[in-house]
Length: 329
Image (cartoon, rainbow, N blue to C red; front, side, top):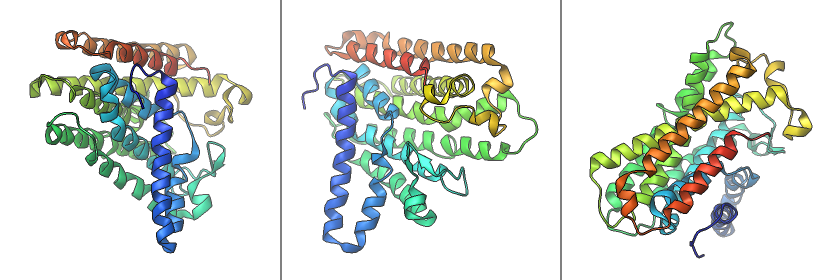
């Protein structure tokens, strides 16, 4: 595929193609081993359930924003790894011991099809394979050991005990509480959603930077990664507040799913804790914080010296974030 100035639709097709290749590879193994057939189908089942593919898309866009079109190939494995991490978290979230959901994106959840124990294994497999994918990154320069270590570190940080897992842990701990503060909910959203989105931007950014002819200092690379992760956290906070607002203000038809679930379940949300008007203000505040951080990254003097088409992807990335955080369904 030509990577010259790809639009959003082409990037989404690229992601879908990678997921399809993953399914084909699993099927080919299954054909050789009868006993592998079921796990092959179970493993790819949640991956092929659809969705917006927000996380891999942000990964590719951030790679393009810092490295231009040539960075998209480098970032493909990272984008798929991020989607596998996200999918594993959904499989585990749906389990009876967690949220006990029967449907995901209009389809029976993995544990409803394969049983709870096997669904747990599917999630474990997706998590493990994500890091295997990072090791298969196709680098354009001989800096693979340095950059690969940063990919692993930033993905583990966003998905692990200091990120997504911590957020989920806190969310479970607050279940049934009679009093929850906005600061506590903010901490849940920051970690449960925001940290992995920070990993998306950081991994994409690392892949983009890896294509630069001039090697930047470790200090500058650390600064880039830190700001990208912070921007992702702000995106996650705005995203979750927006979700709360939509759940409280839209109909089933407008959302395409059951509206008002938060109120029915008596959940503590941004709307319940802050009110609609203040929640809208906070969502906009976090959106602006994320975009300001990204623009700060894009204004780095070194980026202006690159002979690349990165500005195209910078505009696409900012546009996609604004669209995501102002969505009506």
